[in-house]
Length: 61
View: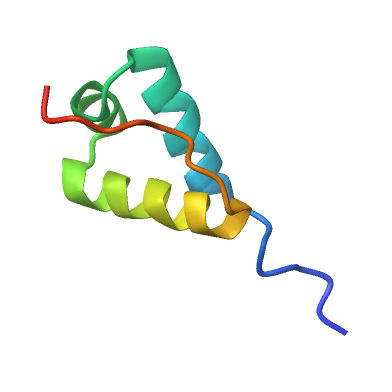
């Protein structure tokens, strides 16, 4: 039996989530983490799908 559930977030996803919360922006979080914005967004979207909840309301500004 696999002890890890597919619904559990990864450490990276949790770090990205916290960075977005603290920076209040995906761009700021990406800069802080030293990654580009698209991979950060993908990780957050995957986290939302795992948890089956929308964590951030996105807009273009």
